[in-house]
Length: 219
Image (cartoon, rainbow, N blue to C red; front, side, top):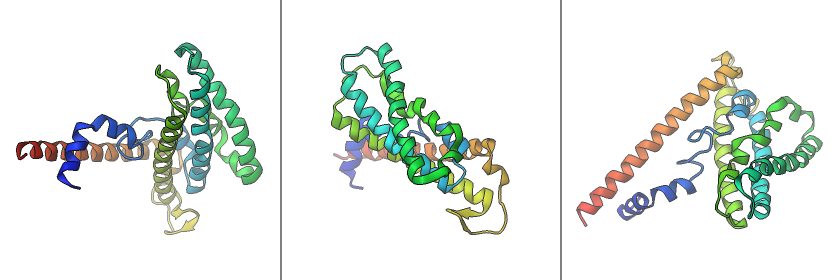
């Protein structure tokens, strides 16, 4: 990265964090959103893909619809309206997932419909400023990508440790960490990955700050 890029990032750090939903402000590892579905249901790559599909078709449409309709609503009304829209969208998402993906959707139990009220989907209701449709789409897709990266990272690790497989392909003949398939194992793995992720972000921010200050001294 060029030195001038570090100076720009340092001067616009907050904006950079908002835009980089996958890395610097990952909704799962940095904000702690959608933890229950990942911790409980995210035990394999297959389950992770189902969660990602549900979030893809749920998050952005909910955000776009509410951004159009709630422009003149106060926050108390938005508090009830966001989950209402999310539930309606989810009804269609669940129907088509069940129709095309079969009973495998049922393996996620209550942790698929629980996404309807997860802060990952409905957190936007607390914002008082108006949000354009384009911004809703862009930010919704960014959050979706951030969730997908976190979800699949955790699912790959848990499936490998618990069953010795990745995507159903056998890699080792023993279970390296059987508790990874259970909720408490999921919490531990998510916490560990989130800690490492947070440390990497802090290290990157420190590097940007050091390089930017170095540029200022020599400019």
